[in-house]
Image (cartoon, rainbow, N blue to C red; front, top):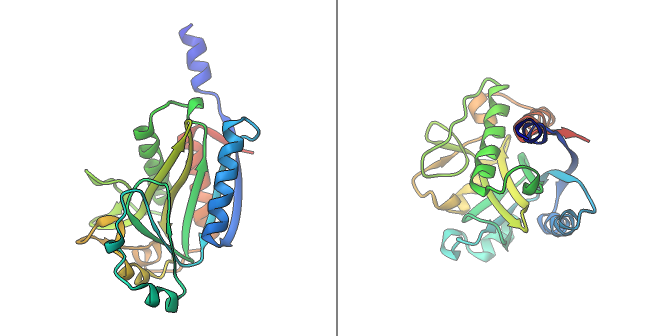
Length: 225
């Protein structure tokens, strides 16, 4: 019996990678909801959405309006939209140059452990960074991945009937000035950074995507479809 259990745990399930390029947030949010329903009903396999968004601020379930530091009029002038969404966490920014990943995963295939799922997302990011020669770290009491005292990647998830949605955001070449519009993730005294700043050089988004997908498949024991 033990050998059979070990064999099941070592099985690599397929995951479909959907690279959407640069897309409107609301469009991809609607897509996530459709895919979650299909995953719950077993109509599709696990799916990994990769996307960059036009400038948008999202408020999670614990987010407060006062954490958005700019007026609606100013946001409109800057071309930044605002959405209240059903993920964990507080307020964050998404924009061009930021890799946003939405895993639509059936956790029943692995382990019904949301805390471990979040740790695994962090591990996939950390492994990706290591392949670029960057040391990413966890910080006690917080989610996400850090470089010293600066936050590089944020995580905010949702789960319906053990199928995940929402996910993570990794700053690659993001214009960090946008983060001055918010109190990011409620971290008043923490700074936000990007891979471009850490590496002091240009880095191609396609390379980061490839590294992340490979690291994700390794951590979650998936194989790319």
